[in-house]
Image 1 (cartoon, one colour):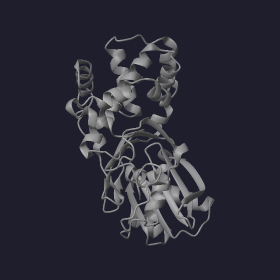
Image 2 (cartoon, one colour):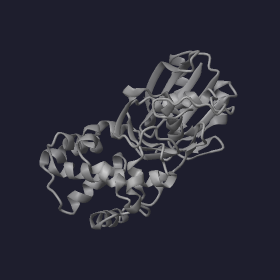
Image 3 (cartoon, rainbow, N blue to C red):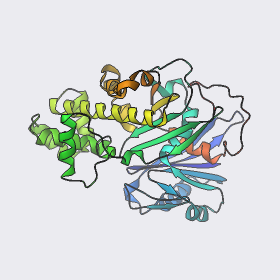
Image 4 (cartoon, one colour):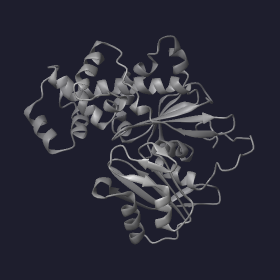
Length: 344
């Protein structure tokens, strides 16, 4: 039995996973925990196994943060996740701690057509390197190196790279945020908290009015959710402005990642936010226009498929796939393309 984990700043999800004879992974048991209610991952693992006793043979945890030698000091929590400590508590040797976006990149091969929404089809049978860009509590990014036979996920912390303003409005946004942060990264803008930062900027620079009912809701509930829901329902023009600017900046950064890796195999959009704003992504050209707006390389970017990951269990499936060691041995170079034109 595989123990798979997807550890984020908001929620931690653990699952017991089986692999069938055809190599497909099946989540037998899944439990979600509020990360901030616990002192560390070891507490959640202990509670999960008390509630769902099982004989674990191997485990892998995708963690939001940089991982070095199997150890991660999480970015949006006060936890330190250490694979050696977890191995000792589980009583097994085969435990891995990897970056959460690396896990998501492993999970892409587990997706089926209903798990995907296409924003840009790109060229037919596109192959080559690929990337995953995933805004949520933070901004996760990963590369996927194509060796001609299979993909090799590459963990990055690209979400913490410098925000690059493209016009006068975005320069003003940068100046606004520099009053609060020593370093303004894309994560300060393309994430749940980033949407709130954009909204505050537009409000505080008198680019729209905040109605009393909205001010009340922002005090009582998750601000990012309030802003996005009000925007999608067209209840508040200021929220619509904020969401539209967010989508443009999301597209611009996805285009940056696509160029950084020359992602001719495609760009995958993961995380909770793209699914929640999917209708807006599909019904406007804001994302794709910003994605393509790279001067002389516009046509190359247009050739790259852009897909939204709809399956919120992709990270768990990827961690399970990594735990199963499917890439531990070099496979013969006779790939049978899956639905996305790749072979893992």
